[in-house]
Length: 355
Image 1 (cartoon, one colour):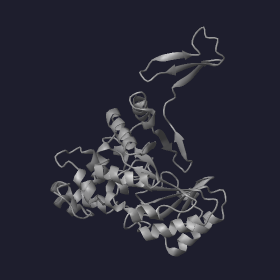
Image 2 (cartoon, rainbow, N blue to C red):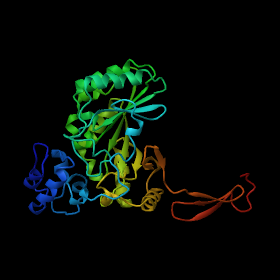
Image 3 (cartoon, rainbow, N blue to C red):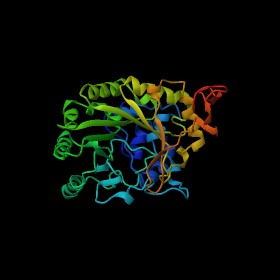
C-alpha cells in the first residue's frame, strides 16, 4: 500500500498495514509517551510480511518501549549538563551543538533524545533563544565547528536554514558547519537545489552526517540525494547505531558500510546504543559490538570502517570502544591479532628491528 503522507498515529499504522489491529491498544499506549512519524518513503521500505523487518523495528512502536531499566535515563548522554544557554551544548572545547529544532521527519524507537523530540517536545527555538544561542557562539572564539542537530535540522525550510547559515557566516572563528540528519534517506525529495544552497555559506565548509542503520535504507533515491549534495561540495559522513534485530550481523553491517561508500558517504561513527528509556530491547553488550566490529576488519575495505563509540553516560563525551588488536607482552613487544584471528609477535622473534 503506497502512502501519500506521513503516518503519525497508531490507527494510521493499522490502516497502512504496518501494525496488526490486535496491537493497536499497545501502540496507542506507547504513542502517549513517544512520538510516531513514518514518511511515505520509509513506509514503502517496510516488508509487511516480515514480523522481524529491520526497517519496521526502527520506526513502528512496540510495547517494550514502556519497560524501563534502572540504568536508563531521560538525558543519557548528559546534554543538559553542558548547556550554557537554551539550544547550545558545549561539551568539547572547539565545537558546539546548536539544537535549532526538536522535530524530525521520522521518530526512531531507540532515539537517545526521545524525551525531548516530537510534537510535545521542546519545539523550535524562539527567535529570542536563537539570538542568545548565536550570541554565545559569537562570544566564544574557541568554537571552530557548529553542529546543527536536534531534532533534524533539515525539516526546517530552506529559507530558515539559509538565515542560520548567513548568521554563522559572519562569525570568523567558525570554520565548519555540520548537519546531523536522516532526511536524504527518509525524505530524499526534500534534497533539492534550494535546500542544498541553503546549507552553504561563504568561508564555511559544510559537512553532513547521514544517519542510516540498514542497507535497505540506501535506496536509489537516497543515493541520488547524496550525489546531489556531494556534487555541490557538501562533505558526507555516516552515523549508525548498532541495534539488536536491525544490524547486529557482520554481513548486514558490511553491506551498510559499503553502501555508504558507494553513495560517497564516508563511514564515521557506529554508536553503541545509549541508555535512553525503553530501549533495552535494542541494546547489545559491548563485547558483542566489539566482535561485530572486529568481523568488519579484513571483510571490507578500510574505506568502510567506522569508529565504534560509546557516549559515556553523564555527559563525559564519546570514547572509542573497539577491542584493541595489540596487547603488550613485554618490554617493547606486542601480540598483534590479524583479521582472521591469528596472533603474531611484534617485532617478530629474532628481528633486529628496534621496538
